[in-house]
Image (tube, rainbow, N blue to C red; front, top):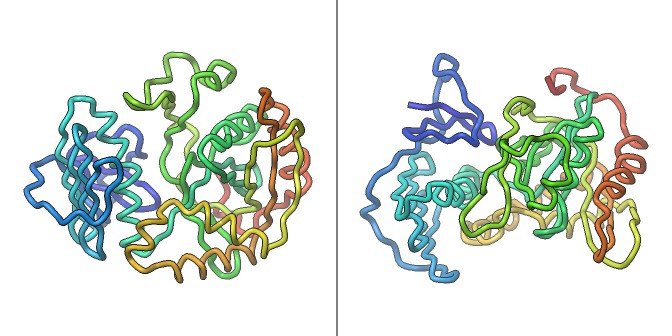
Length: 315
């Protein structure tokens, strides 16, 4: 068996999942969910159809059938059975990491957000949210070239505890466009791999710098693309609520489990405990390096202070 930590949960897996953070068996007291390969014998009524996919979700069960890729079955939000329908195992793991993990999280009452982020030397993290293609991963990668550590890519749990906003990272896998990879200076060519057969992105592991500990969220920046100029605007807390709602990672799942009130309560508490910005980059020219530099100057350096909890500082 393999043991991993993902979103703070302990995963016991019969299969190797390179993108997760390994945990020594001796340090595991109790696993939160298990993963195994097997035959998915149960079928479910189709209650959501997306390009032929069959999805079923309630408080205790989850079923996902992606034709020619895999069937996934989750029982009691703690036992995952995967039946591959292809020998392209990266494709099989792609939907497990995204859809299945999101289902497990919401069934356990946790709400993931669509964010990437970096950590600073003071123990704070800075998150970036936006539509697909807005540049979340690339912004984090460019800031890591400027001295920051990649904290998470694509998703994280954001929550408020004792009046402080924290984020828990997902797992040490970065996804970037081929053009972005060619322009970056942190990773060698042999460290990248095809993320999935039908997605034109590279995957890059960053286990050596990954830290699973939650960090204080010093700020969340929502990214946009328009016009010819780079500009940054600080948002009022009430303005951030709409953006936070739009950038939750499990919108349809929350709706199925009637958790919209939980989402609104969470984003309202987040809005009152951290800082927010809207940052725009031009839509018709490459500007990621200058964009990241502007974010570093106007947001990260201008608003940074020591974390209130030194025990949560990055190692």
